[in-house]
Image 1 (cartoon, helix red, strand yellow):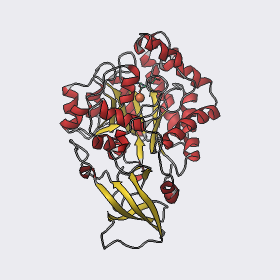
Image 2: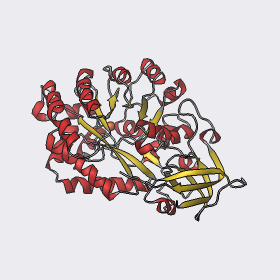
Image 3: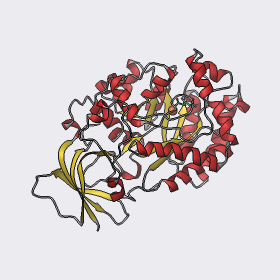
Image 4: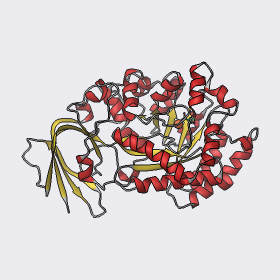
Length: 422
Ligand code: NIG
Ligand code: FE
């Protein structure tokens, strides 16, 4: 079996605890001068077979050695929450919000998500793929190796299925560079043709849209629902989740973004893999998450973009919840692909430590995606190896250098390509 030694690198394994405060790089598995031996298995997956300090005497030999020149290597970054497949933009609404109009007001007058739905319904498959591919390329430049992509700007059978087909084509185009987890989100908004009849729309989602998505030949991993005043309530989420569970999909939910209407409690009670946003989550929700395995996915750039308060990230970590950090890349509330900036804002505005933020885009992001393909978001012996190398010498530079330009060192990814399957 082919083997590869990675030599002369500063490694953060992220193989520490998933919960609780972290205050040192050692607690997140920092080895300032590390050596790694990888082996490619019969299925083509590179696995870590040995890791340790460079001066240990028991390192096995390998066919090839890659000198990493002292660069920083971390588990491949994972953006665990994006809405990257959509057409058009909402710059006009952005400017209206800057002038004082609220997101809810814009949505109520026919803009918001439904503005993007109209553009996405008009777009061809090729147009959806091309625009999403440029966003995914930007993500790669930030060091992202695993990304979740939601549908949810179609809200009818044809366009939700076309959005999944776009994800399938993106999986082909980014093979070896990005692993893409697909989330079905027809429960993103009530489309205009069902205005005033949310139950009617949920019936169509359950009877027609979700079955068509499951049957279209594109593997889907999760269902997500926007549980929010004016969107979907927990009863609607329950109806859709029951169908999704029947297909073997996991369940996620957008909750507590603007108002707490019971979404978090419902999601935790129904063993959701993750809950996302959490801007107005209070003490009770924090305690529920701390006592569960459901991952709290925090999206600090959405708060900045909407001028809303941040999720209680510090309190969630202190209470013992599993906390992940993601971009929320979408045209309305977070027009960004920059996961490094999300990490930095989680620290500077959300008061996470750098170690907790890095854990939020590696180990805990993998948990938020159900450890796709057996990848666990950390560097550990026996596990699939997926990593990003930065042209930096120390992990704190990922945070200290605000607005860090892309500095991914690609020879590492080339050496382990094609590690990633779809
Ligand atoms: O995650 N909250 C719902 N969905 C998106 C916003 C989508 C949009 O405005 O287009 C979000 O913030
Ligand atoms: Fe979102």
